[in-house]
Length: 51
Image (cartoon, rainbow, N blue to C red):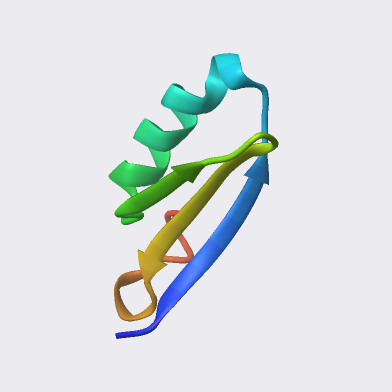
């Protein structure tokens, strides 16, 4: 299965909210980094309109 990777720069204060919002539209794996969040979604299930 192929995954899409999205790298988002954001402040630490907003990471939990961002992860929750992305999880609602199909992202299922997250990695918090020094810059923000890397989010992953199965390519076949990714809904561009919801994004």
